[in-house]
Image 1 (cartoon, chains in turn orange, red):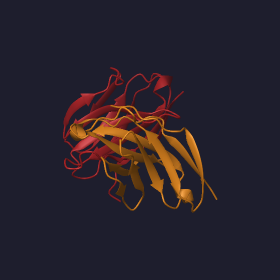
Image 2 (cartoon, one colour; image 1 turned 60 degrees about the horizontal axis):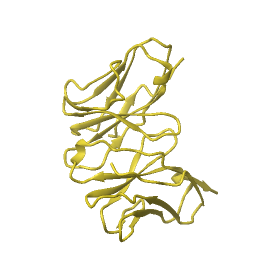
Image 3 (cartoon, helix red, strand yellow; image 1 turned 30 degrees about the vertical axis):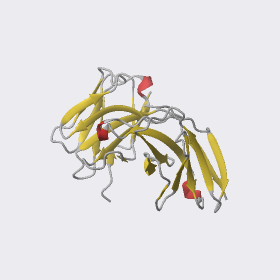
Image 4 (cartoon, chains in turn red, blue; image 1 turned 90 degrees about the vertical axis):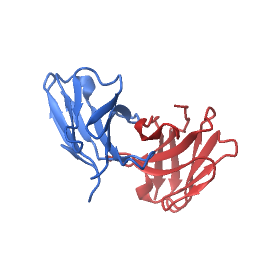
Length: 113
Length: 114
């Protein structure tokens, strides 16, 4: 799997937007960009994924650079419940679900009240 | 709630003992995965089942580890002769055939080997 680079930690104030960056300069044309998050004492939780176009769902938005070498997960209004480790992962769409996800160390997001 | 469940949630054991963990995936999910997570790191893949067949194993899965999914529903992960280095969170995830890229994770079993 291609490698991703994320900051170790970020802070945000409650009810403000949060932009979590991810660099993936070696991404291939068939790699999907996935984001998972892990709340304290819980298993990882799927957040969003995309290939080329920006994506929105009820949890977050994913902005993908035109060259696809970086992406940004956007939480529009951070709440205290969004404090978690956020993982950016690349998955080749040709592999199907048989391939395991390869997690890095992620970004620890702290939300300040 | 019909999410992935894991039991026990916590296990403390002495070095050299055997331990077994259970994972109940979401009903009708035919794919099941085990991961291990140590403090400060992301989860690492251990093994994968499609129905009852174990299709992939990581080199992290030493010969002291064995996983089964006898009827294609729940799965067990056994660690024999535990070592202190086995202390970690053991996570189970499942996915349906059609989901492709999305995993549904359980809350994990935290193992402490004294």
